Length: 85
Image (cartoon, rainbow, N blue to C red; front, top):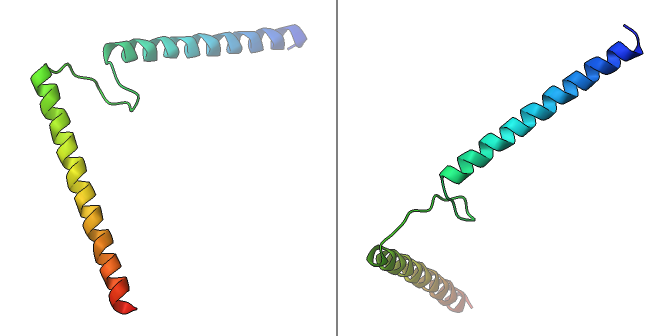
């Protein structure tokens, strides 16, 4: 195989690789358009205003409960330190 034959094989392989990569990018783009997602990669769902309000309220309650738990743990650690001194 002379230099031109090798070059033709290399060009053919690179062309096939580019076509496959472009095809994959188009497929991924189509899949992404079918399922809207937010920045965290979670699928977005349409909610009614009432459902959205309830979801926000549930999120807020969970946040308050977590904050109360953290405050209670910090208070317990503080009591233990003061009792040990």
